[in-house]
Image (cartoon, rainbow, N blue to C red; front, side, top):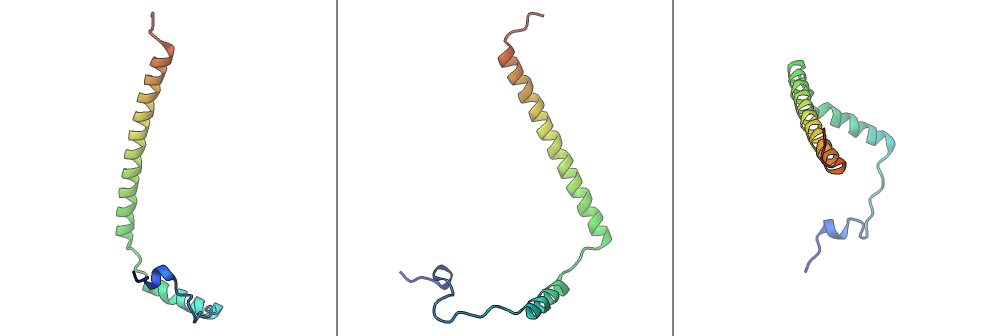
Length: 82
């Protein structure tokens, strides 16, 4: 069975030197220039989608919490005489 480079690691024999700080900075800046930032319309759309999802999840979790709370309360308090 042959081991791939990913399994063996790339440290066999010729270890590469670390990148210098200025080179790292230049590479970071070059990568950030490739980033496509959303337009204001896209940003508003994404915000609304996220808020609707979060509110829906809050409603589901709240309903489950209320239901389980009432169930546990009913189990541990026994039958009500009132």
